[in-house]
Length: 141
Picture 1 (cartoon, rainbow, N blue to C red):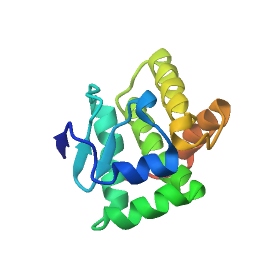
Picture 2 (picture 1 turned 60 degrees about the horizontal axis):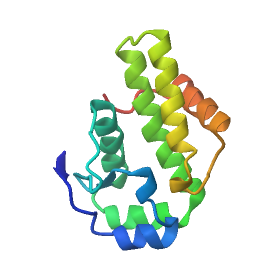
Picture 3 (picture 1 turned 180 degrees about the horizontal axis):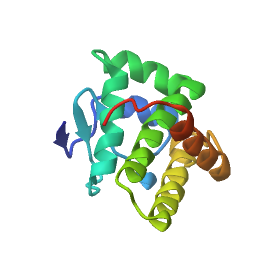
Picture 4 (picture 1 turned 120 degrees about the horizontal axis):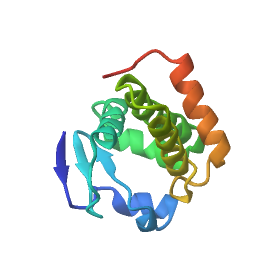
């Protein structure tokens, strides 16, 4: 995937629907580009997370974003898939249990973040991510 430190082309629409997300310093996937305006380090697992979003968006990221920003249930489903696949990487890479636990906690904090609209609590996020990995076949790797 390409990377850019610019804001994504639909940043205004994102802020209009989700509010000021800058506190969370998110990455944004639009098509095959990861937009990183807050200049975060992009680790392999977060690159994989954004790759999942690229696959979800298919050939028309504008249509995907329209639904993502306006439909909280769709947003949760899309993020759960991306975070679930991100967590699966820790498992597939045979991370020690303490690292897997830390990873799950970190990902669940992100998923339950206000930047997504407080879709789930921290404990719900942990449970959903664990269950995603347990009950869903590998989508990509």
